[in-house]
Length: 254
Image: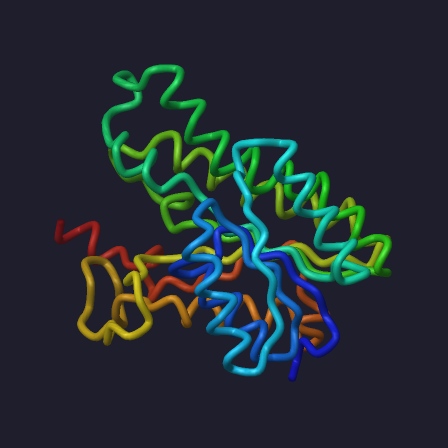
């Protein structure tokens, strides 16, 4: 019960990595705000958590709408009396997957849509409206979810890579700004993750030194960063990518 008595908001937690983080947090005694755009999926995640003995509530969240982000942060703090942990995991996956092309082919609208969902809403607004509640609680932990694409060049993903790279930089600044409030800020650099933990994840994916990841690989890391076990860790980029970003052999052989 490493997170007993804590309250967390996990953005984009109706599926994939976010869902695994929410479920693992709840299993460690945390009260979890499950958020996302799809009510049906969010309700099912809450049901899974409560059936396992945890506590969670679903809050509809549109990460591209500033008023929605602010409302959720305030509502969670009102419901549970405080907010201790903020996990910024949401991303506009549909926009990213349908906009794979050279930078010069992007429209300004396509660029703005990816930056808005990945950086502005997911980190800027979430921290702007979430961190004051962490301050009121006497401290806490912010865990951002970034990508290996923020550290290497990958053709076709200029906006997404730029947004994730900005998250890495913001992590260091936010850690310094909020240290006096006893708030730690860290980021997990994620490699390729298979959608569901039930998949085996065996076999070395292209560029990975171990295997493809599963959501629980990231959830374990997020749980540690959110817990007091990581009390001496802040402003860090913690890589959980199966060796993807250090594998020079993959670049040479490609």
